[in-house]
Structure formats: structure tokens, C-alpha cells
Length: 128
Image 1 (cartoon, rainbow, N blue to C red):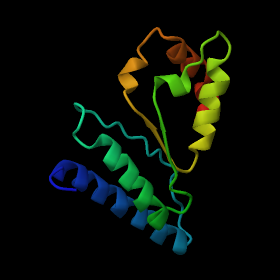
Image 2 (cartoon, rainbow, N blue to C red; image 1 turned 90 degrees about the horizontal axis):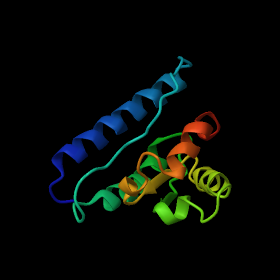
Image 3 (cartoon, rainbow, N blue to C red; image 1 turned 180 degrees about the vertical axis):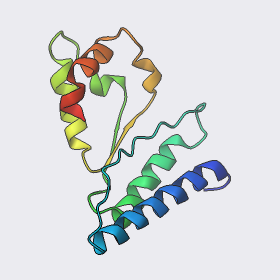
């Protein structure tokens, strides 16, 4: 990737953190459970999808649980057409991305007040 110096710095921090975790496990030391949630923002064409896919290639090489799959969805992949269908659809997508990367393209389309926002708020403990 050309440019994106701040992104590269964040990826390097992530890799260093994963290396520390690996060494702690090897020595039998406790390793705190941490979330690896990330948000990529910016206008179209700046490389958000490329970065997500690259992380999908890198993480299985370093993280114990990462499988490396990158599940790419947009609003249509998460929100169903009828009441009561959004939660199962969203949950299925989230499950398919476990131990990998869930990349929600154009996530801004999932605005507050939408049925998905309400569903995620109700199902947060199930999804995380």
C-alpha cells in the first residue's frame, strides 16, 4: 500500500500487541481478552476495503484464533425486507465473520433509528 502511513502505524501496533500476547501465552502468563474492533472512515477510493482485506491476510499469520476470512456486506446484507427477519439475517452474517473480519461497506447507511440499529442494541450481548 502506498501512503496510508497512519494506517500502517496502526497495523504495526496491532501486530506488536499480538506478538506480546503470543509470548505471554508461551510463558504461561495471563492474556487479557481484548476486542479488535476497528472503524475505517473516509471518502470512496481511499483504501478502506483494501486495508480490511489485507488484515484478513495478515491476522491468520499472527493471531491464535483468527481464520482470516473477510466477510463483506452492505446494508442489504444485514437488513431484511420484513419485520422480524433483520435480527436472524444480521446474526448469521456476524457468526460467519467470527474469528475473522466483518467489513460493513457504507455503514453510514445503517443510521440511528433504523431497524438494524434497534436490533443490534437489543441483541448486543448475543452478538459480542
